Image (cartoon, rainbow, N blue to C red; front, side, top):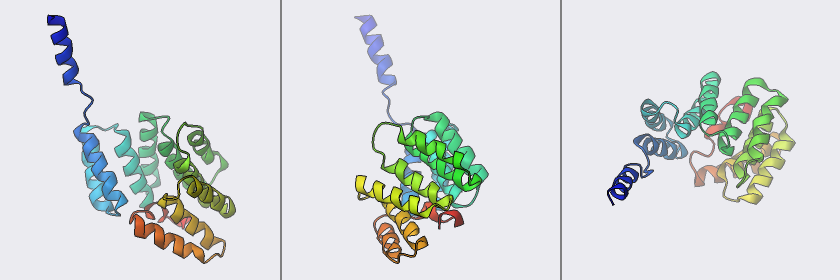
Length: 199
């Protein structure tokens, strides 16, 4: 009986409840998705101060830094995110995009292929492949990727915004409507497309 009580009290102390770093990382993500990058960065910095290897906070800070053109710092954050969650397709996809921007080499797509091989929804991985193809100036391939992502998940605003970029690059004026609709539904939808390689 005493052993049962000890085990139950030990388990109660490790309930798996989200940590303060988790809470701050979620707040940071929400702010970033609202297009409030400065406020998001502040929350993410707080999360990483508490837990330097926090994968989600590293990922989101990496995305913000990528948008700011801080490629070296973004890649370091995304490497940390992938190290913390090596099978996370979103983290792999983001690192694929960052590598495509940084190197403009075919090998950058390796992480996109790994992301696509993961179980679960492929929409984020396909959208990342589209972004990487934009960075590599493969506009028709990017358009195909975004169309596939949108067929799988019609409310994927990053993919809709990316399709807008690809369409505009290919001379299709409907791209402007795609971008406007994406931003009207998710103000931060275009945050990953601010770099020249993704415009």
